[in-house]
Length: 522
Length: 100
Image (cartoon, rainbow over all chains, first blue to last red):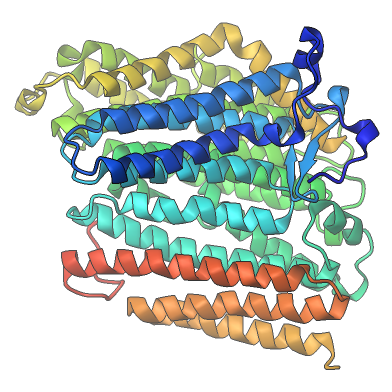
């Protein structure tokens, strides 16, 4: 299963060594992915055995246990130092097609925590639907694809994992099949997604044509001396950027995001805009550092890819924030804000200079930002899920006075909004601070300046929501608020607590992320 | 043996035909066929350069791509079906409830 030399194999050494037990076998490094796959299959089985259940609590519990197990495993491995240089280096499985290292485990933890919040919240959101079994299994299997995407280190596994994420996502967006908005969103997501994945796989085929291998390490070696095929490889890399841009909702393939996040069921919007985006960044980080020499002395094909990403980052964050400022619907505003945050996270790829001493810090800060974003953005979309379930309405005016009828959730929403804007007491401030500081230290002060200006602008539209909730007078629409969906409430509160707890707990997060990113450049 | 550049040209041509179909056709089923062309253009590259390098990876991966294309079409047909039930057409330009 492994191609590593037995002498260097010392997986999971830290924890078991302390207890005196033998090291775990290598395949257990895939534990988080296996837990998600097992939960997905168990959900399908449960749904087949008990097809006529009126309640979906059991399904929700199975999905939550599976994703919590994945979260616990990846957290344990991260704490034990699995895949770190100190404990024997990255663990490779299946002839190097899969690599478990700090990056893979960190992003698996992000995906698993978002999945947990989403499946718990879906218990209330899907109360009256006929087929909740499919919904839960698709969410959990897509999460398994995302975890696999973060660990894939061959272009073949990357493409298969990417499709494992995309295909369930299309179905999830169109899940409300009687709802025209949901169907329209599903259709548009499918159309853009199918074309992007075709462009992506054509890019892979060109890279294969130029290098003769799909493994990232072999591709990297071949990129050192391409000869006549440099042009082919360059076109291939550009086409692969289009595929990553689709997954992360960044310019130039960002235009699907507002439609899809607006039309999809709100828990699915939360899932896609947090977990799917994070997984896209995970694979982009790995591919560009390991295969395409980002941050190396010699750039692939003689093009400064960091500069390409810098342009994309500036355009993405500016476009996202300006478009968000003029929206009338809260969900659509959040969709554009999600594009804006993709722009911030792109700084992790953009502010990389050849041999720069802060490369690991910048990319680590971008990973930490995606971690915090996973909680605050998921929480914000789940609050919208709650409002949708009550049937209050979608615009800023409809949200007027929500604080008087649902104070706890409104406090949580306020936390999310200020944290997304990057105000000091919350997690979003710290991740942005480290991100911009890393960019400045690496010599990209103008990138940090654009990011900071965009953050100031974003405060305007985020505070519009807070103003509507707390300051404006309640309207008649609030009569629709007649129930207390416990699971949804719980998920929103947990996300809010996580956003605040990051304040004292940010040290370990940023340290883990920076260690994982530095290992990529090492 | 045919020189590998010709395979690159053939694949690029097939890819562009597919892309042209995606951009101009309004019928959802034509869209699926055009995406299929784009994917198979990638397969031409994989198989041709697999033979060129004497390495089986590309050939095996082209089988993966074929399988994934089939899965994608299955999902696509499902979405087109609900599109037809809700809007009464399979024209992808008709649903305009949300502005781009």
